[in-house]
Length: 138
Image (cartoon, rainbow, N blue to C red):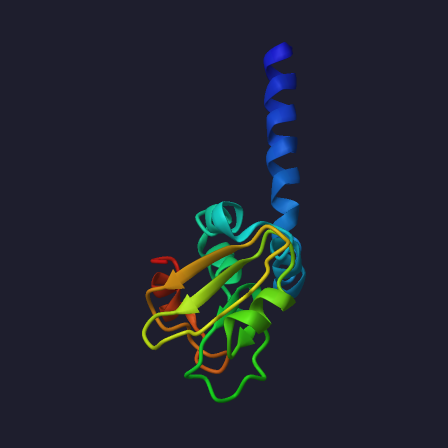
């Protein structure tokens, strides 16, 4: 009898764990936005293809990229200073590779991680599943 109970409890827990997958993409991305980018959001991206797509979506990362002319994409900043002031404690800011970023006298009074981005982050218009392997190679 105990074996049936354990088996039933295990199957109930398994189905309960999958309820998060019933959330639409916008809700799930909102949940992921509360995770620290490295390592939590990165590890979340390892769960399944859908979570990989959502956890690595450009809307969830702050980026400094001087080459982007249209700064209307959320999370894209022309310089380090503006990215730092917009960042929340615990955010990771990806700084575009190449080019020179001049910054002087920046006071950072919150925990942040600044990382050189080795690849060009796609714009929101160009974002698709083929971009995922580039994002995770950070």
